[in-house]
Amino acid sequence: MAVASLVAVVSLLPGCSEEAPIVTYQIPTTVPAALATEDTRMVAAILPQAEQAWFFKVMGRKSAVDTAADEFRQFVEQIEFEDGQPVIGELPSNWKQGGSRSMRFASIDINTPTEQLDLSISPLSRNDQWDALVTSNVNRWRGQVGLEPTEEKWSGAEELDWQHAGENDADAAIWVDVTGRPPENGSSMMGAPMMGNAPFAGGAPFAGGPVGDGEMPADPHAGLPRSTREAIAAKSQSLQDTPAGAAAASGDSDVQDTGSAGASDPDSKLKFDRPEGWRDGRMSSMRLAAFNVGPEETSAEVTVISAGGNLRDNVKRWIGQTRQSTVPDEDVDAAFDSAEEMEIGGRPAQRFVLIPDSEETDAESTAENATAIDGTIVPLSDSFAMFIKMTGPPETVRQQSAQMKSFLESLQF
Image (tube, rainbow, N blue to C red; front, top):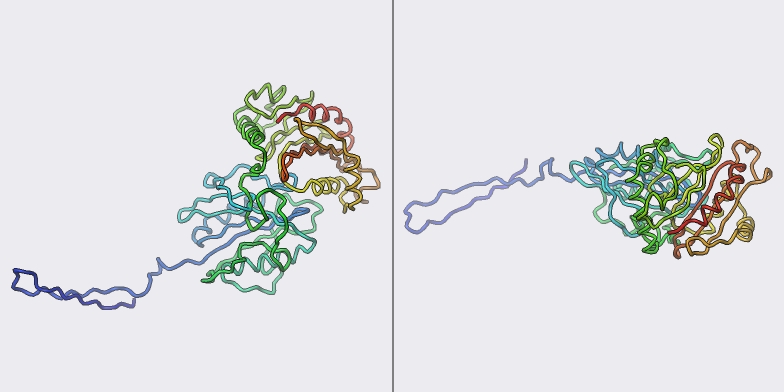
């Protein structure tokens, strides 16, 4: 260990006849290894959706990320999407929902023995060049930890074993794990996700400004009217306080609630009359209500959520789900022209009944796996809407049409 000698000469104290001794100190001039700056480790995932790429990222001191990396990977491998948005669900005990951050969909704080890590979740509009989008973002992330780009596919990233990837998804989910020493002077563009080889500067599909890397309001309902936010909060709490809500959270479908939401939850502003025969469905952090309808063996699912996004893009995605093929703009125009105009909760709404004809499905589709959608959109603000959607076999969706309309007309929020 390198040292420097420091000699201190103490003058005679008043009244003393002896000279004070000379004291020599040894001061280290190098930082002990235990105190040296650690490497930085980043673990991240990029998950494909039809209109967007979703980014999940954790970055921090290597010792801290090492303790959280495996749990984080398991988390992203099990992520499900509902209408194009991730369903966060129940978090590990050492994870907590973080505060609102501009341009993020959500933030999660991860507590480790040495550091609190920030998990950022954000979307980015995408084009058809998936590999180019992945490579440019991985290169940017490598730069954040002081690494150069590589000639490997996806700049060294690997395919993630994502459990909920769609059967027809051609684009791979991506896992990134890089460690290095960040440059002393970081680039001002380091935080912005990139479309292909250029920073994304497009409009945000949600309220709150442009979409960035982990940048959006943490509360997915932040742009809704206050009365609607209060109704959502009340409904979410009531679901946790009722046996049916506890059953849905635990996966126990045998415990069911009966009657209307208003009857079982008098304090909630989200009310509806449940049609006869509708059974409790799978709830999540984004779903305000969920039901299984029709025969058990060919049941359809009804969900109620609030979300942001371009309404036309949502309808286009729904049409694509019913035929598993590209959707020309004229078909989207036709869907809007034929949509049923309704009033729901005192607000204008449009109902789209999308039942595929045999010639609209691809050659591999059969009557057994065809999907129909009865979806209704209720705009709540410039950027948010309520989506009430029934998805399932065409025959079940047809048979439940009257019950669905009755349910829509009963909704209050």
